[in-house]
Image 1 (tube, rainbow, N blue to C red):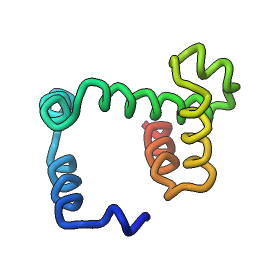
Image 2 (cartoon, one colour):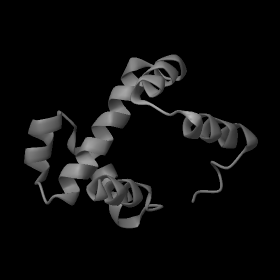
Image 3 (tube, helix red, strand yellow):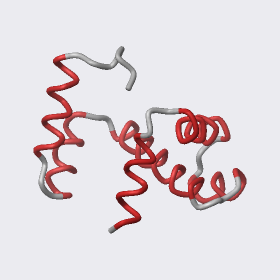
Image 4 (cartoon, one colour):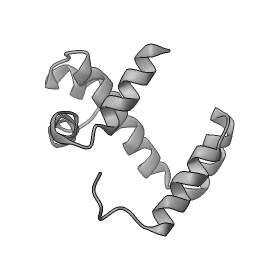
Length: 96
């Protein structure tokens, strides 16, 4: 975990997110707290991570998601050398 992110405000944000119980509640909260562009970017990065994890090529991922090669590279770097946040989520999604 990057300690530069750690703060009471960030802890409060994460507590708020963890309090959400349904997809509809998530839509309502995230629509208020983030811009449409920010939400679409986060969703795109998660989709890129899923595709990378599945072995898709950069070209396939770019065509499927519209993500730039820079975004794909950033997500791949996080998958390989990051805080394992993507890995945790991907493994949990696969288990469902």
